[in-house]
Image (cartoon, rainbow, N blue to C red; front, top):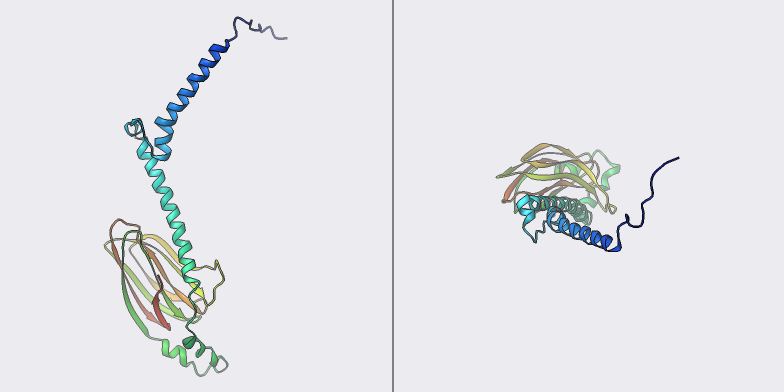
Length: 221
């Protein structure tokens, strides 16, 4: 059906030619690895060719982005783990649930209502901090926070007393934010508040103002 002519033995490459082609291919692959792949993927440039072609800078950016992603993941994990072990303050809470059967005497919430505080925290580059309010379910707190000399990443969340491992209840989060304000309403009895992380190259100061119905305020990180 096909009239293709089969090559003769003389037309086939010899073993010497095949070996030479293999060696040339290996050398070319090694050259590409050293001059292109290593600079662009790992920021390693033993020959200097990668820098001349701009590939080393590309590799540095890739590594930096990977480190940023890993650091952000570590921040979220650290925030959850740090908040969960915080044990409830027994004297303050034990006295409050007791009169649940007598709603006409809300003595503990009345004592907590109307509190106000102002806290300022300076964060070095890559440093994080967390402030929590101890609140009863349904309690409301007006808040405002702002950043001097920069921006921060933040995560507003809450943890019930004796929270199970891996529990997370978020109220809001953001990146490169200079300020935020609003009303925080507790979804359950427990600790509710803010985590900030300075991703800039210079120190920043976060100032938090709170006013409302909470039992206590505490920096936990």
